[in-house]
Picture 1 (cartoon, rainbow, N blue to C red):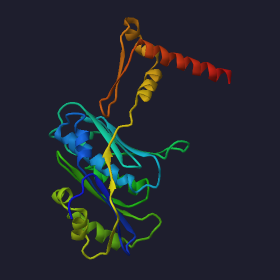
Picture 2 (picture 1 turned 90 degrees about the vertical axis):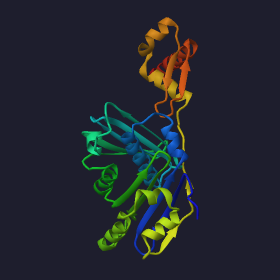
Picture 3 (picture 1 turned 30 degrees about the vertical axis):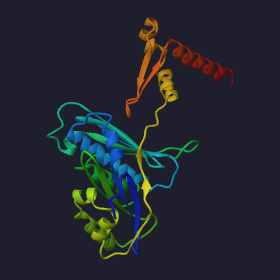
Picture 4 (picture 1 turned 90 degrees about the horizontal axis):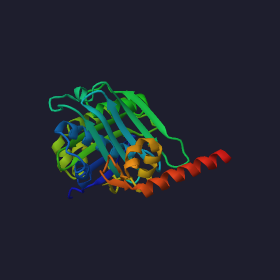
Length: 291
């Protein structure tokens, strides 16, 4: 069996109440890298975040999206990864200064992890926030699920410049798997190498790891890079910032540029566009006042 690029596979370990996910990101990951020239250490953590989010998104029963955000006072002061329920991924990172000699904790500094689940229009968002205290992103996410969700979860992540890959094990919600079984399966996976995650077809990888167990491997789900920016959303940003923010451009008759931070798409609003945007805003405010 050949390696299937940009694909996620769900699997169950029979008679154990443990589920898992494997993902391999190829063009998806390379598309993220095309948006900025990331230093190697920043690139590594961003790959882990996007790969982990793909894995975690597949365990949730919702129509919407999930967002992971790391923010703090280290050289890597902001990281955002976003995944929709239909497998569309994007991500970005912001850094300052030298990052090459930093450990993970040195890279993110005093920081917090925020997980936001948006189940779609008309439904309430869920947000969980934890302090980052662990030595790698996988451990941070494992601690988050242990503490915030009471759902034991383990992650193994790997990446290079052309691909990223990961494996997730998680107890099925509402089940009482014996702790010995859970620990045995976690130990069986601990020896997996980055090379194996990046190069082995999923069936071969899982057979090697869980030779004693009966596995049920489901059909793969395609994942891809994509951005949800639009001219309408960029216009909403202009309106939210307000007319005064763009007063110099308006006075000079110059266009306003709004750049998407994820994909670098530029949206240009000339004087006529801005007049329409702020006129529509005024009409909306007047209508709200009448009601």
